Length: 221
Image (cartoon, rainbow, N blue to C red; front, side, top):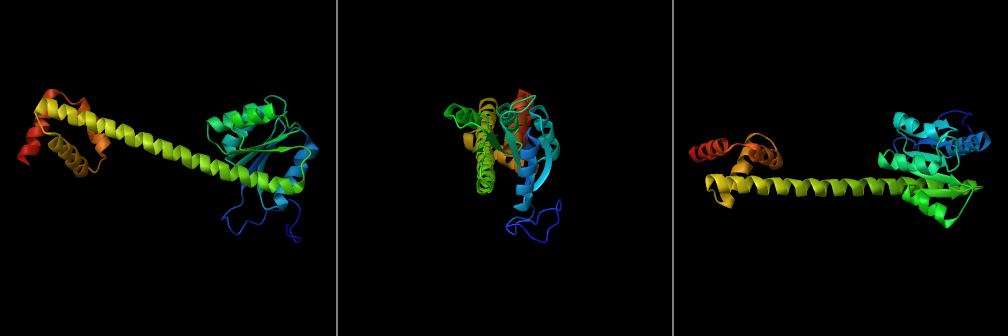
């Protein structure tokens, strides 16, 4: 519920669960609907940081303001909301909630493919807005974490490939055992406070003479 003592246009009271209010950008070409959205969102504790009536201005606005959620109407001048949602998704800028006057399944499927994480069919009830915003936020956080997991897994895989290649070079050129080659890479990484992947990439680029000198220096050590 809204704070009855709050003045119109004053910043919303932050949710006690969140250190700061959720930041939202609005893109809706109908001024009356946009104003109603702003007032409703701010009364519910959200912070509307920017708004536009044109779809071709949304991406720049989101890049500049870095909101948590972008609420986009499907039909707007310049660029439609589905296209804008796809651009926001590609850059992983924020969660996207789409507003549409249509509920056809093909439109909903297109919206999902474009990266919309929730949608509302106009005219919608006030009570539907907050849950839709929260669903978009949760799904975006899940998507970001999934992307991070994939990136970490890919980085580990690339690191293993580099280490295996570096071991292979040391074994072929310096007649080292696999265990000794791995130990050399590990000790060089620890000594230089670098990752084994970084050391492996360096070893892969070394000449035969450099590899032999590296092997001999370890033997002397």
